[in-house]
Length: 428
Ligand code: SOE
Image 1 (tube, rainbow, N blue to C red):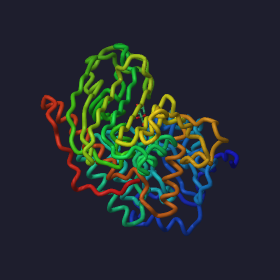
Image 2 (image 1 turned 45 degrees about the horizontal axis):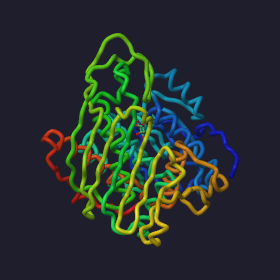
Image 3 (image 1 turned 45 degrees about the vertical axis):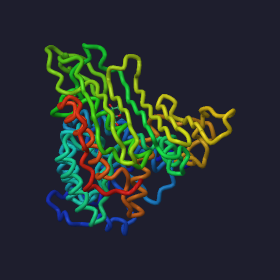
Image 4 (image 1 turned 90 degrees about the horizontal axis):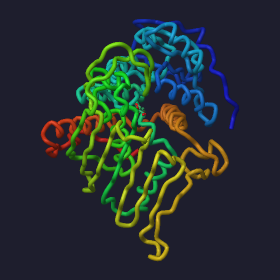
């Protein structure tokens, strides 16, 4: 493992060039051999996680491209300057449009609330940048469709677009996907997936942006339900074709937010209305016919950040639990009957996905490693000129499932078909 490098200063040679020719191809940069320069828009909870990812990726992994954390963007000049200094960004800026217009920026990482994903990502793609966009891809299907259209146009000039479904990059999840693809569970017959948190059980927890439809699009459904929808499609290689669901807002009014970001905050004077769901429960049908049950909730008292998935097939079963993220449970139904039982596989061997770059066998990884692997995969895709997964098409497919769940909930849980026919994407 190489030592931790500190980010370099942003380029002295290239200045901001608002209004420059946006037709420059990202492929041109590879001739110059300079580092890939990243601009990140947003600096809350996800901004911190992505910063760790960008910093560690080139330090730990052998990358054919060098990476520079060039500029961090946020609306409050002092706060963003402080965050930039804290997380190791070379500079800070308050105007994302100015940054996107710069010739010396290669990757735009969008970690703002969902209401600005489409505008920023589309502008960045049109300016010829590679884009990493936090999940869910957008707040509406229409926005996600526009983003995919922009990504498709930009791809012709070599620009890559990727969605931040980071849990795919937990080695045990990637390995679970590999095992299913190798036939370890046989035909997938049922999937159970749940993402459970409890940070809203307290009725005095303030009205953060994640509880406002105009900013977040939806509540537990889009914020954490999106992860298990993506994970289910990722590990099975199948699409969710129909859903039946219900959503619930348990605490309907909350104190306004005084200060804080992420999943906690300090209340201010006054109350406001919660305009998103607190919990969503739905069933789904996969393209291969299997039945899936999903639960996404912020009201699972005692469950801090519990993401579980279990895939049952005719030859075996695999289960993952984020609270024990270095391992998998594997049940082999083809083993002699008297030896059958769930076996714990510690996913820390060098041959497991991503693990070789880290520590000796048995030395654990954590939450932030998914963000490092995400940065690694994007940089490698840029270098190899291939599509990074999850693509915007995959992000749109999740968005359509989210919308279908809401439609179903509005129709007394009637089954709703998810529009999937026009989306083509390969297995990641
Ligand atoms: C980001 O990927 C995210 O989904 C957050 O938005 C959730 O709130 C967090 O708990 C899990 O990660």
